[in-house]
Length: 481
Image (cartoon, rainbow, N blue to C red):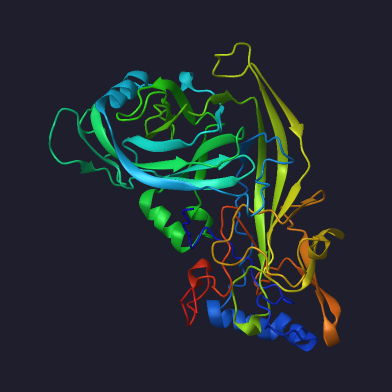
């Protein structure tokens, strides 16, 4: 299995007072009472700088996302850590000019090609399949290509410009690197021969639906780099353009790359990152024996989301912020698209049905039992999971699974504006008791922070970078000690 770590997609839920990230951390009730105010705030400011009195701790923007309806209990990944599997191999291949000619014939330059588009997913078959970028247009935006597989989760496939080269068909010169700038591959007119990276996937669940989407930074590569440095700065958040919201279109029966055995078939997918509707900002191919079939999508879940994360006692100087990690999906609606004809690009009617809010627990790095509350109602406790002990650290070690589901809960009563969540911590031994950790007030040292669900949490003993906070310079800017 190929593993790729992404330091910051970020999860920074800060300081949950009565936790112990590692089993050697000791708990004392006196320490909690003291650290909750002066000592805790001092430790936080020593690490991250002085807190602005107007600083709030909700770093989300309320962006709406869309997912195809899953056959499971929700549209989120519900696989165990062992099952959440994106086994794949990477390589490279030369794409012949016939593929380029086919693409330009089906997607004429400078033309609104949106009438060809339909909401779609692909259905995973029994054989492996390969994804390969074949064209990159002239676009100032920067993006990453991702996929979501039902029951498994989300996986980044490719980043704009990575290892993609081309030359005009019929020439013998060196292949030219595309890069991530605005020129793309249109300047030479085409058709092209393309030297491209390949990503071959196997062992995914047969029959599961697969959705593709772009994560787009409209400010270009500079904004992308700023996001990597501080994934909690909402001005640098990406937007999503997916195959289920008419931002991609599929063209079947494409020429297969040379050298493949008989029986392989291919589909090319055109992507739109802005509003010119030519669907040539990125074009990639999916091939297999046979290629996973395209499915017409008629039902989609529309929702918003937040991730909440907590940290242990500040005096441990741990600052990995992973003692509790849970997501809440809210303002959820089931949208059904109704078409008069099978080939219509636009629906004749759209029906919407309200769904319940959903909570998903992703990780538990603390070694004490905790209870998650919404308002005054307890909705989930670590002690209710019979497969683990309350002292276990779950899904916070190196190589953790960002799609892991430790548990789910009904989040009815959740108020996204008020962030009406809290966590109670049950201590042990001589200092036995229950301590409540609410969402922090403005200008105070935080013990819970709300971040986008695209944000990764840190592994054990890896400090959240100081660049994530809009505070005065801290004495130590290292992200790992």
